[in-house]
Length: 233
Ligand code: CA
Image 1: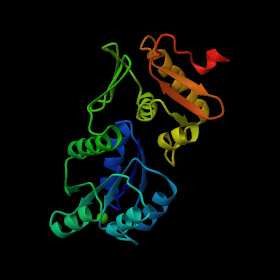
Image 2: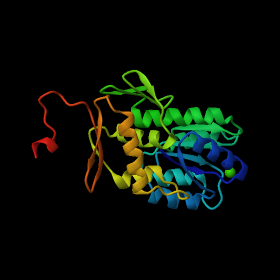
Image 3: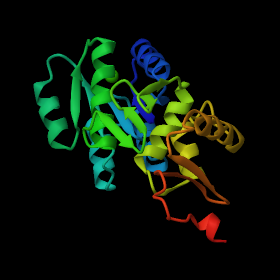
Image 4: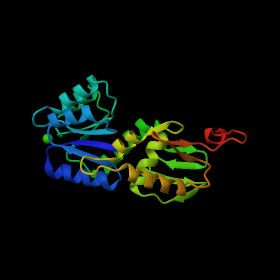
């Protein structure tokens, strides 16, 4: 999951960036409204954390322009304690939630989890696919009810594949969700992560199939008598 953080307060943005990165999210950070607008028109983010008082372009303007471009990216706005009007305007302009400064990082993290869960999993706290069960709250995988240890990057890849289960996930799409400006992930690294995920999901009946030249597809257990395209060749 890739998040754009728009905040001009250095200390606050460092703290938020660090916390989100430790939670396995990929974070890009900009300090001005104009930079946010540019980033949002180039990259499809999974979530936007948007301060309202920003240099160059107001946060509300950034939000207005984002929605005008037809983007449904969830937006959490950060506002000052006394700005009831800003909060109402922000929500009416299409923000999904807000936090009033100062706030506890734990609460911001929980709100981000809730927003991403709603957007990605339709509020479900558990996704079952064959014998694979993914807990969307704790972001934990179990296979046949046995917990499986996953790295932050493995979780990130699994989430993208599960979101689009049964559909081909383009390698570029995968890379865009996993890379930040500071750390671009290579196709080679993605292959290694997928390889590890396959091993960890062994016995679940679910497979991650490579579609040459395109990407990957997470498939449910095969029904007996149902031949895969590979076997038909
Ligand atoms: Ca500010």
